[in-house]
Length: 589
Image (cartoon, rainbow, N blue to C red; front, side, top):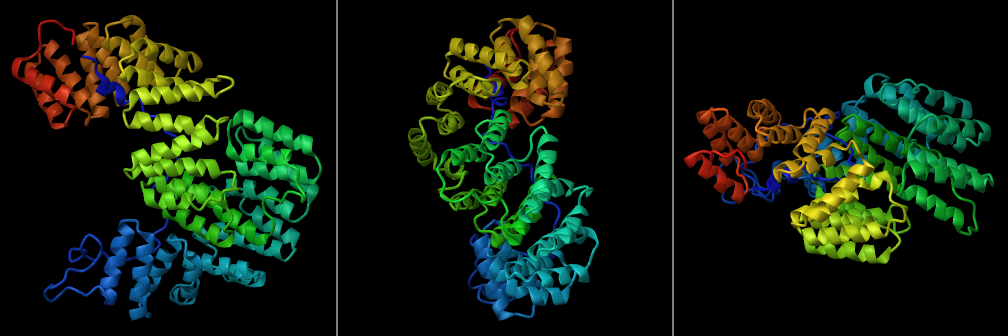
């Protein structure tokens, strides 16, 4: 049999890089673990309930509905229910705290500000109310108030990291350059925010109109990193533009695009250079308030890379409170929502990206992906086709459309869209291996093996050590009893690159099985099951190998396990036959 189910497990190509965020740092509200059994699916209390249940219009009923809404990621409903409960019981510390966090999570930071005094009276050292208080004072240009807040402490834990940021931009707002730089300097060696210091230093110096130190700081961070942050590159390009150094700005953007092709911010910068502007380009950070917004955005990015969880989301909402035009924060927040499969929230956030933003096309493409994840696949296809038609010089929308067709298992359509995407690319580079791989998978699943093989070989030419390509092509050859020696070597290389990938280890075991090396196959397939025990294909393979080495009872046990793992129908029928009859004397499968 051609084991497409197994190969399919190795073909997922992400349509964008993901931030690996997991729930973590901040327990923002110490809410009680109260039961929801009396609630319906929409959070409403059951009617006609006996004594011991509560009406929805009671504080307790609204609190339960708010909790339920938060658990289902309906931030707007959560905030509204909390507000209703709080109006009924405004002295409740629990409701004040829950309402406060829910409002921020829903992006309604301005509504959370009136709750700050009560929360700070309950616990003056609690981080989030203190940060909202500082942000509100920054918006009001009360820089002295922010500095008093910093001086009053506390100065331990998370406050030790963020007090210097608050002080730096409060001093900058007052025009106190030396104090601003000295405050930021305290974070230079911070284990988590050292990178934030490096990001903010040139922006702060630029804000303080210190031209020579600004350029030195930009050069230090950009030339000292293999892949400097896009916003810093954009900031330096803007600095060069404002100083009339257009050729240097263009060279900088071109050099960075070579490292980060098709980056929307860098491309936007080149378009800006080409445009005739009546006013000079604005700096990336134009005032102290925007500086603190940048600091919150940068810290959210840092927390994201370090399992920031809810704290990253809350910082991004605070950044948008301070600077509503910060589309970078919206993109990162929407990306976090996607990672957590909160598709409605991601869709709404992408919809707030300005049409004039560098991220406008990306946001529309991501909206289409969210629409698909919400079960509206045909609508997503139409949207991506419109985007592809509107941007004939770009391959991005058509390639996402190809990925979408592949996810929907529309193999001929996927192959056609990949082909169109390749036609739009002026020069094929090693980074384009994934397009040939994706089209190769589509051709293979559409039973056009000659075309599939050619694409896989091209992908391997572009990325000779790519474990996905090595494994897919090697496994395909093994499954068709072709090029067994070369295929085995390719799979062995893939295993060396990804030794803990159960699917790839399974491929090696199956290659050995195909060559009649059953004892060796058992060793590899047992390890594959250990690494990926919930896979029916791998479990079936182990059963086959056990049978060939005379361990028939163990083989039938594995086949029964494979059936319990709900394999595709074709495999299920074959496994059932093997349970009843065993394997034929011939080793081929």
